[in-house]
Image 1 (tube, rainbow, N blue to C red):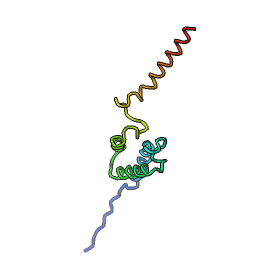
Image 2 (tube, helix red, strand yellow):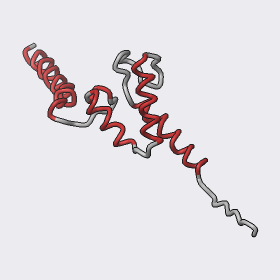
Image 3 (spheres, rainbow, N blue to C red):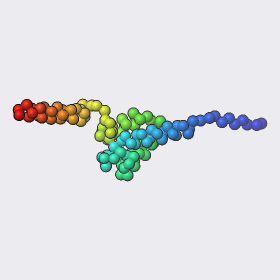
Length: 115
């Protein structure tokens, strides 16, 4: 009796490249909570190393970018995201610069009129 071996083509190389690109994208978009001025890709803080491992594990388990960012922001707050979503808790961060510019413009305009 002869046995027949069928080899099915798999796209593991393509998946690995896709996963590597996603990994690199996500770790550059997450802030190191210890350093706070670096992303976790650049930081060598123990927490950043652990977060990189966690991101890698989640990607290997099939999680997407949105899931990973939501998981991280739920665990570490929106501060871990370089581009946080607009929420009532961080509305001042989004609107604050515009309010500051309006007040500054009003003050400067008022001083020019009184001269």
